[in-house]
Image 1 (cartoon, rainbow, N blue to C red):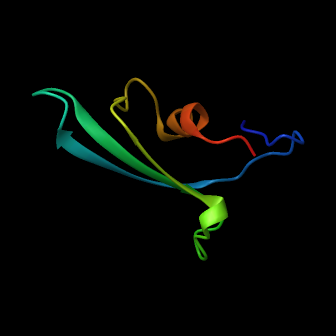
Image 2: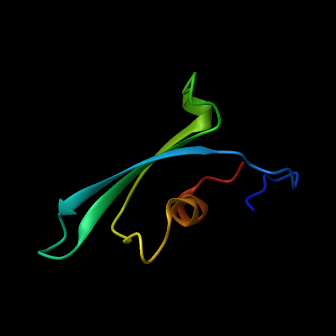
Length: 71
C-alpha cells in the first residue's frame, strides 16, 4: 500500500494507455494518469507519466510508486 509522508494511505485512480513500438520494434510506451480525484483533475493532485516498462515488468501501481513525486 502506498502512503503519504504522514503514513496515511494514498488512494489514486489510474488510467493507462499502452502505445505500440516506440523504442525499437519490440518496446512500446505506456502512458499513465494517476489522480486523487477523477472528477476534478486538479494540477496538484494529478500526475501524468510515460514509461517504457512493460505491464509484465511493472503494473500501473508500481510505475506510479517508482515515478511519483513525494507528497
